[in-house]
Length: 294
Length: 191
Image 1 (cartoon, rainbow over the protein chains, first blue to last red):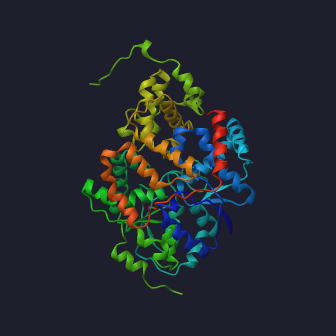
Image 2: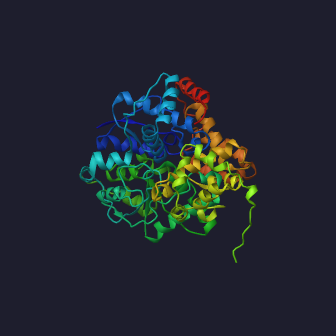
């Protein structure tokens, strides 16, 4: 299965461990991810806050570049997914926007006919590869590992077609297919604060504290995420949360592709699991480095 | 006792509503039935000057300054929970974006850190075609929070020591094409 891959800016920087795990896992799952040649930033939430038409136009440039390849565009970043997907929907829905973005693209010698389907990597993994195939590839048993599935916001809202905005289940089923135990995580779609961690740190820290607290109360050993910003907020700021709220969280925050990689029997280093801010706990490390069958 | 300020009718801005209607997605607020689903869904309404429901009400009544100077629009983190739950399908997050841009345009954003972050983000994209997270953080800290620069050190170190904070930007190649697109948007004018 071949896809046009849109990595997004974060996986080349603060989320490079996400990219490591995708590089390691995709071939094993039979996914061929061909990077979109010369892609640009999607604009994220920040660009939209200051310029609307520019934001839609730069986002549409990526769709225009992808269209001639006639393949689904796949991105591992929830923010990129929401922005590209939203651009796609809005260009179809609002003729005036479509016309202006069309003119802007034309100035760059591009055009976009609306024929691209934008998907999140999680969607591709659970629906195109499928739970059964993944379960059949499991080489390392994760029995006893309690996992909190944290979807966050922008993978399930606002325009998502592959899961429910309030009560998503795809990652739950994936975790179970890998043989781990998925906890009933009520905070699974509550916001981590996103870029407020930079601008209103007190508020974002409190949101993240609540996310970690629910995971801890349910006995989760780790929290699995699909978004670079969620991962950074919960991972890199966990020490600060502990200091501020007098908590003792020690919950590794790992990408869903890293968990898949561990199940497939891949080495932790190859999956970037040695470069988390909150290191794997000793029992988790032993489990993750445990015997591989077959 | 409920403490209320009374605002004289003549102090309200009756053009504000029509201006909001003219914004993309602005007409949406006509549909609001003041049910409060948005405010009760919002993870941050508890710290907002006014929750989203009240913002809609204030817009209709003409409270221009209260709306555009409120922290509400900048505390919205675009989680879209309100938008997917709204029984009238109002794209509330988009209305918040529109209010952000209007507040920026009218200079009602003094000291708003989110604006400094957003503007520097756009600058990264306009320069490299991609966001250079390390430089963005550095520029943001210098401009928005230099006195507290030290508080960012532990997190920066955690990223850097785990080789997750590249010092050089990741540039796109055909930046000229992107710039042509941006220039054209400038000519066309924002929507």
